[in-house]
Amino acid sequence: MTSPKIWFITGASRGFGREWSIAALERGDRVAATARDTSTLDDLVERFGDAILPLQLDVNDHDADFAAVAQAHEHFGRLDVIVNNAGYGHFGFIEEITEDEARAQIETNLFGALWVTQAALPFLREQGSGHIIQVSSIGGISAFPLVGIYHASKWGLEGFSQALAQEVADFGIHVTLVEPGGFSTDWGGASASHSEQNPAYDAFREKTMQGRASRNAEPGDPHASGAAILQIVDAQEPPLRVFFGTAPLGIAKADYAKRLETWEKWNHVSELAQG
Image 1 (cartoon, helix red, strand yellow):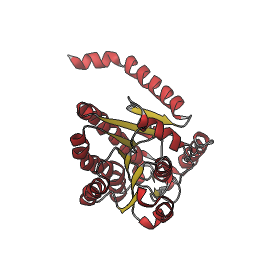
Image 2 (image 1 turned 90 degrees about the vertical axis):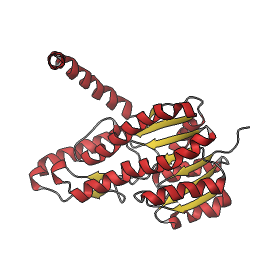
Image 3 (image 1 turned 180 degrees about the vertical axis):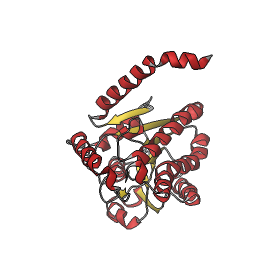
């Protein structure tokens, strides 16, 4: 029988973070669960007792990220699975996004994950094992109108994580980018933020919202994702990338087919540039 895994999960108060915390705890693993408001974890503490360590954390705080990871390691004695789940979606066309909105989105979705990853790596290297789960999105490899700055944050996460996977493989550390499609979380609801709307985009905004509704017509069940994440962390050779949900594969195939077609069509210009 394998030993219980020790998890560190950011954004554990809701959505995937909460569901994955419960899935891990229900099978006997232990979880350091972070949230900006730890009272949202009170019911899990009451249910699972000492198996869960609630930690107050805003991932935008670099020093607090390092302190929280160190506290979790000291408390449990090791760390096996690091889940960078904390994040939110910002809605606004590129022209509408303010500097503060752009910086806030990147700080949380990209830099928050970077700081937690950096904080965990020395512990994982020393023990010669570990698995870093980066919660990306189908929006980490494709892009749609109205969420451009969100895409920027997730494409950045994808880039550094693919490089990271190569850098840490020899230390026995795995990296997986989880790329969900639409799920019944509040990603686009209470946790989302919105730019002030420019009337010039009103007609296109309506068209865009209709497209979003069509893509998310059958959202996935966050509870069901718990069983899926357990399969990923238990795999001997986990994937670098994995979609969650049925919609992303079709989106990716269509998107990459168009990219390849365009690159091949314009390859004569690529060769011209070579000299």
